[in-house]
Length: 142
Image (cartoon, rainbow, N blue to C red; front, side):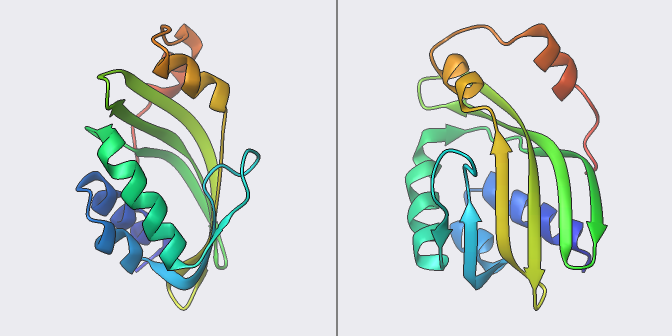
């Protein structure tokens, strides 16, 4: 399985809120920078599970999409949008870039970069900016 196929499999599991399915794509020693410039990384599957279990009830209709990617060795570089409906019914679309590292065909490192102020504005009920609409209106790889 290619690295992009592994990531898309993880995304499909997350859309189904299958936490065990998500974790199956992760190495036991995962280092997950779920908000790379905002918070320290989570280390290990136990902490990854805890984050996923906390997030799952807050998100509905997840449509996380990847627009572009490049693979180099055991690294996958991606650009996409993490999109979902919040628990209070607001559409949240967070364009992002990420770096995914693999060991033994499992994700060992995950670094996600996005603008938290834009996410918080959408959660607060502000309208999505037109340039963001254009940015996320692209076709996903799958």
